[in-house]
Amino acid sequence: MAKLWGGRFTKETNKLVEELTASISFDQKLAAEDIAGSLAHVQMLGECGVISSADAETIKAGLLAVKAKLENSELQYSVANEDIHMNIEKFLIDEIGSVGGKLHTGRSRNDQVATDMHLYLKNHTIAIIELIEATQAAILKQAEENIDTILPGYTHLQRAQPVSFAHHLMAYFWMLERDKARLGDSLDRIDWLPLGAGALAGTTFPINRERTAELLGVKHVYPNSMDAVSDRDFILEFLSAGAILMMHISRLAEELVIWSSQEFQFVELDDSFCTGSSIMPQKKNPDVPELLRAKTGRVYGNLMGLLTVLKGLPLAYNKDMQEDKEGMFDTVETLEGSLQLLAPMIETMTVNKRRMKQAVKQDYSNATDIADYLVTKGLPFREAHEIIGKIVLFAIQQNKFLLDLRLEEYQEFSPLFAEDIYDVLAPENVVAARDSYGGTAPNQVEEQINLAKQALAL
Image (tube, rainbow, N blue to C red):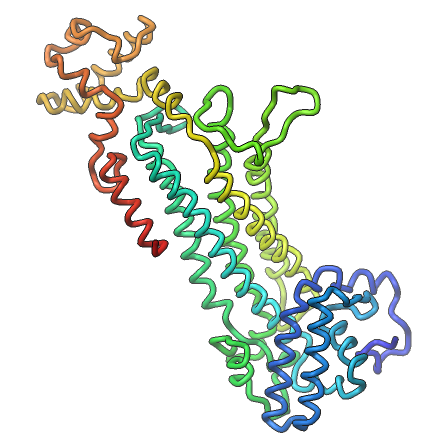
């Protein structure tokens, strides 16, 4: 078949050039959006009298027939037709004849592809936000069941202070809440219509772009045709928000890998989210969180790749922009796939409360509370800090933990110590003492869980 744009050319396209420039292998993902944009466009063309009402109805019927074939997986795409737009137009012409060629009146592939990506990203951003909320709900469920479960909190991956396991989990809830807000905010930049901008300068036909936007349910219309066809900020913003989201997923995945290790044994992941070893039959490998952690790199790469593609492009459209899609598709699929696995993995994991409790009784993470104890007795914090450092060193040398030291041993370092020091050092009291807003005390954790329920409208 001759190229739909081939009138100016005297030679056929080199086959290697066809393979290099064709995008149908990946932009076929935009088929549904391409048909939706075309249906709105032809409706507008008919209403504005750019084409006859009869032709508009014929084209709409043809597009709906193509849509039905798409939904039944009956479409066979051709590299010779280059991209999704020309493949759909070819299918349309096959359905209704040459009148299908009138569909392209008043638009270009430049504004058409931009419109498709706006529609695609809008739909998938909304879907990703819903998946984030499902993950938040799974975190919230585990948190509600573990308000009084205590584990060591870490800084520098060294035990720092005991915290509620619910408090630890809820930190990820709020990270995801910010991710959700970023994606929700980006929808305002995604919800713009380029269609009708033409190749770069608009069109001579009396079209109504606001009507097209209305038909598509899009809020805004680009006021500058050159910006409309060359803008990829909305994809960059999505990729950026997606990279931050994936970073948060990776941090949680890392904790799940550590917590489920034999050294920690704080949680056990459900068998359905783990795999075994081909040689070591005792192994239960946390492959899912490991892969979530690893896939973060590809999402970062997609952001950097598009930034690099766009950094030196003059206005308006350039073929370089064909490279904007694969990274976008990959990030969408990676985020959706990751979140679909993360939520049930969190919901089904078993929390080893006994092991966590044992851990906080066999460390020095309650040392700060001894310093606070001495401060309440009137000692300056800096002096108290030095005394506690010496006590910890002494305990280590004696192969003891702080709760194992006798009162007489404490009093060798300061006469301010009394019998009540053992109440202060009990892990549950250490946690309960952090009663400031946002702290790990059980009542504060319950308050943030209530806030989280409001955020999810539960």
